[in-house]
Length: 540
Image 1 (tube, helix red, strand yellow):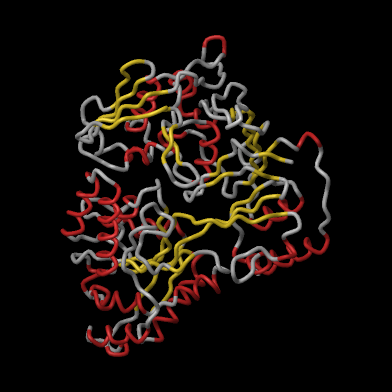
Image 2 (cartoon, one colour):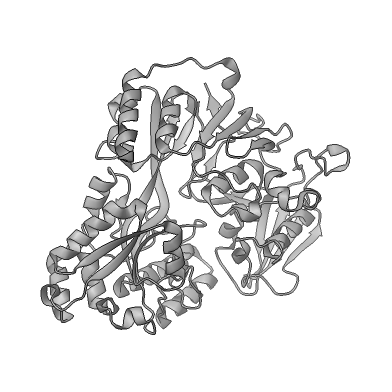
């Protein structure tokens, strides 16, 4: 009923919509909406996309990820790695200043130094902070004095053992640089009184209604022509609760950008090939781009679990049969309107650096092969198999029902049980579900962030399936110490292929992001982590 109402509202709007002229004062303010609200603007708690976007506007990290997922300098001009791979030396810029804030003498923002990096990283790992990002350093950095400032512009990070993706991890919003004076002045309220060195400064936050950021007049970065960034005068974030309302406001010109659309609206806005319908293209444009997110079905592999002991899913042949039985292209075409790519090349998504050179072995749609495997496993035509329960979040019901139907076609009876996402994640973490629908989004642009999902030494999360394989573990450790990308990418592909062979997961599709903008917006940059960059945005 709710979806029908949304569709009717959207159709009515499209029939009545007429363009409205923007006022001059709106032209240099970039407006977007954040469904679900915003918990914090403290980078130590940048655990979701909403916080990451705000943090990216307000702060800098030592290194950052560009539009092609390359690691480039940011607050650090350059860096070196010792021969043993344990010590990273970062040389910082000398022209970066914190935003003005009452915590500083005279309220004037001071220069950022290497001591601020030390403070920021120690704050992340300090148990008193309770940062969900503590994992980026815990167990990786040296147990003794891991963060050091040699002088104002030289910062040294020491690892306990080599970890090749460290630069990628340091680009994460968790690793943003903060000022101790401001953090200590506000304490727990720092979440709503942020102060960084980024292109925009905090101005006002009426929680649940509007967040306002203003241009940082002392921002250090310039464009190729020597003009100071950012071009915008500010950013305003609203907090409307529905995708339908977001899209209506975009069409009215009251928003400049939205990220994604509601599933109930996709047929009104997109063709089956994932392009923008002609009637929508007069005033908005669509940018569809690879997103480092793999949607999958997971299978619990813990042989000591009562859920596994009596399950036919414990047999590799059955897991492989399930992989062959699913038509991933139909999922993308009919349930996603062409958004995404069938996941036929392993768990690591398309677009991840390295996959363009070396691909893992995966599964194509082959129901005849699935039937052969079931027969070999002792379940010809699925006979003798009990009903399997697939736990699914409510947003994935349609896809999971389709999967259940395809498995039923080869004799595997599946019952879909819908759950709230938070409860399902709890069950996954506690090994209380043997068959579950989930997604895995990259934290940083290195395939290690997907392969850690299967490393037996890790708990759940990330190892939700409790997968354990000594060969995989050995290759994983070798990859962390590989001194060149070719060797590392080859090991990644071997690990991904081994996972495909053992089939603890059934990858369904590699995701794509949908960014809708008004046609007067230019210069909006993004990468496959779905981090948007507003520094070079212009409103014509």
